[in-house]
Length: 73
Image (cartoon, rainbow, N blue to C red; front, side, top):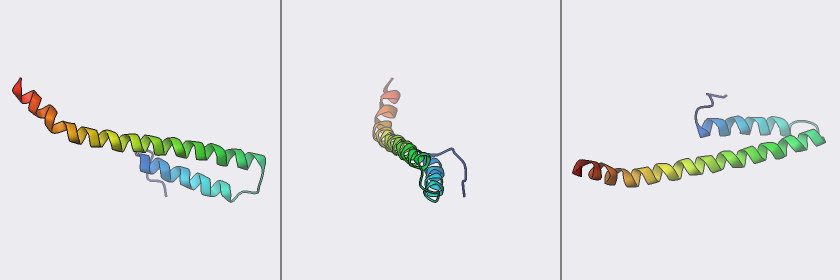
């Protein structure tokens, strides 16, 4: 089931479904190209997800400092 395309997790699920469906097809050059393309897309989604997690961690760590600076002004 696909619940939407609003989060990295939902997009990862869509790619997973596409990969599994493609793996079920008969071997061909088109199938191999599609698998390679989906692997590339999956790597990009993982990269974006990691970046998002790191950014959230930085914002959580810096947030209290920014609020403190804002109160001093």
